[in-house]
Image 1 (tube, rainbow, N blue to C red):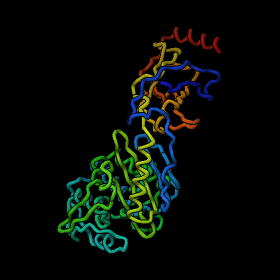
Image 2: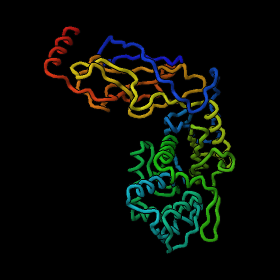
Image 3: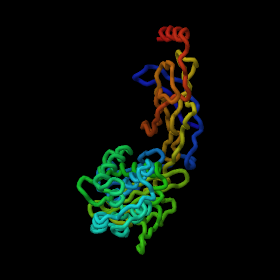
Image 4: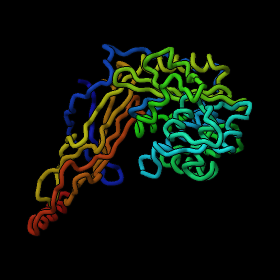
Length: 400
């Protein structure tokens, strides 16, 4: 194992302290590592897309992309945000999957009348179970279903848009703003490719049952059977979502995700030229991402990465680790080139509570930090008695 590990003191807290190298636990690779470094070609950039990116789901790392922070019309990918809000409200107990949702006349007219619109087929002025209505929105991309759901959750689509923006902020979507639940073109309604990748990642992570609606290939309402517009569901069995979109202003858009082995990738394509082209380009990006990248699990929580001397404590040492698993995605064959550095104070003085942040571990490749996490106390170290604290104070003064 050639993974290099150095521990340096935080510059703001100390100078000149370099701790001894610490052995690392053997990481578990999410996909088999290549025997030697592989020359990675550039990502197959879509020639007609306005913006695109490839993101690793586990780490949130962007593997490739263009114009990823440019706000653009997201079209019906908007409905993923609508699904996220509904799932969150269900989880909070504010609504229920068995609720009866009314297909209002406004939802029926606005959702089915637009030239860019798509229609689910739920009868006007009648109700349907919330879960069925949401499937009509996710699978059939029904604009009418999206509006009806928004009205049920928040009273009006306008009020629901406020919820959308609130949840978007929690997810970390900084380049996006929503004014409706369906994605038809409207002033100020926009999202960036990066934000949409964050949204897809959040839906998979937080509400997998809701995410699973998006892999269903067809859905029937009454006598109307419609197919899912995501062509990748038929082309690649590893693809299990997520959402297409199209308007005259947005072009052809696709937020897609696939899982192969333990690795999941998310691809966003905005402003494509056609339904076929967006599928071709998205699949090419997925294949590139899986072929040339691998995810490693470096550290597990509650496991000591390093042990440091503690002053004025009942114990003489403090074990430091991570609170959450630390994962990193790297080009295949380059795991051994990773470097990890820990920033910790020069002097650690008790008490320390279990889980208390003490420093930071940073993992870099080619001198670029690609992952970092807080270093926390694995176990508490209580303050020592008066005489030990006094003695340690004298030793610390002498050492300084």
